[in-house]
Image (tube, rainbow, N blue to C red; front, side, top):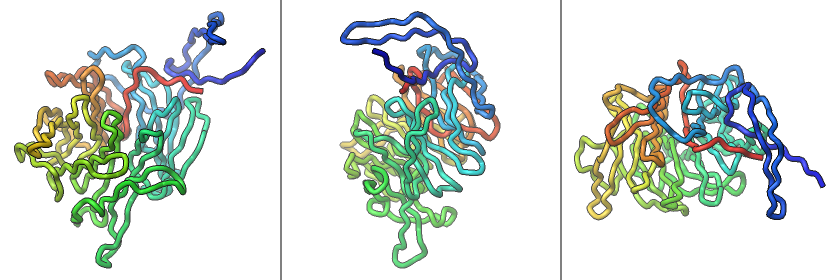
Length: 372
């Protein structure tokens, strides 16, 4: 009896000779092939390049950052901590649009793609070998997306309404599912106080990120123009509304007015239930960790980093807590990635992207995926 399979393996440097052995189990018995060699493929010529500036971090040997990189040509790349791109695929070019969000899902890659600004949004699924699996249209979708507890796509959609018969104004909805099965989980029109900033007209909320937390079984959604964070249960019910500098809504008040955030992005919960926020206020970007006291409705700033670096991320930005307790920061359109030790604010690792290229959505993986 014989069988045949195609397996994509990533993680090796381009055009490198790799030694491999195949191990299979049949009826509980292990069968091992002899050792053979294979030369890894090359990367696309326009693959984004990163320069390592600080290198004092010791992650697992195979650890990589999976990210979408924005430029006239958008790419998805896996970058190891030696600064080598070990996998790369194009997600859009100057003629047909761009990609912003990327997610590793069950051994495949899912990413979104937009034509023009936010026109004709789609989610695309593919294998690591680059084989297309499915393309799904997501009407008026924008920015990042996430994957819910049952593997469903959860995404942000422009929600255009005309309150009091005025000109059309743009809020946001959080949608779950795709195609005819897509349903609205949450609308900013239903739960946030409408206020318009003339400089942002006709958009008033500008939702820019959503993330599912398995530990909390909830979503956290950020709105940059409304300066508001919303935690939702999986049915779309608001659990917490956390207002920042320009917010009209909040279930909490800051212990000190100086501790507020603004233009939030890349929001994550930590393992201890604190909230990490990427914030830009008065042209200075930084990351802040907050503790929320539900009994008193008070927000306490427990840590911050980056104000003295002088970065202003006009677009995007993210912050993640790693399993070792260090903090991974993507400084968005500044084009800088850092791993920071929060106990002493030491930068352990830093990478810079080329001019006008910058990471959009970033994921830390202990090892590159191997997928069928």
